[in-house]
Length: 129
Image (cartoon, rainbow, N blue to C red; front, side, top):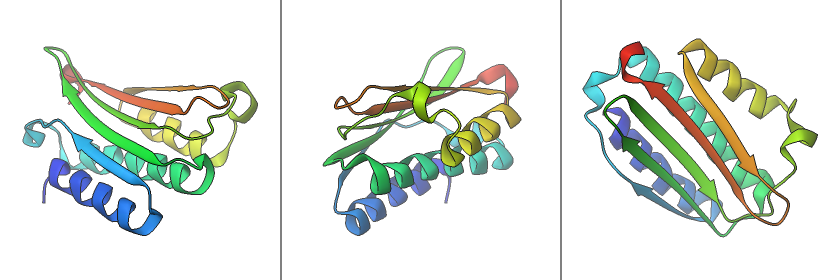
């Protein structure tokens, strides 16, 4: 399976195992992304969903894939308890996601506030694929 089908499958599995609604939106031609980068993107999304399951106390999560002329972005959001990004910046899961993103020349942003959910956005420049 390609990256899009794998992310859809993982979102469905996450919903069943974690009892958290998870929706998947968007689509790209994942053949434009090397298998190595696809694996890192999947692992980052997997870690983000894992964090939602074990820390966010969320009811809903989503994975959205979007594409512009220059970028491909993956956004994982939840409606959970949120957190202060500065306070947990050195957490193991977030550090691993940042390291994986750096290894594929992607940008990773984390937006969260207490009681306001979390958004993790991973963007790849098409020129780096």
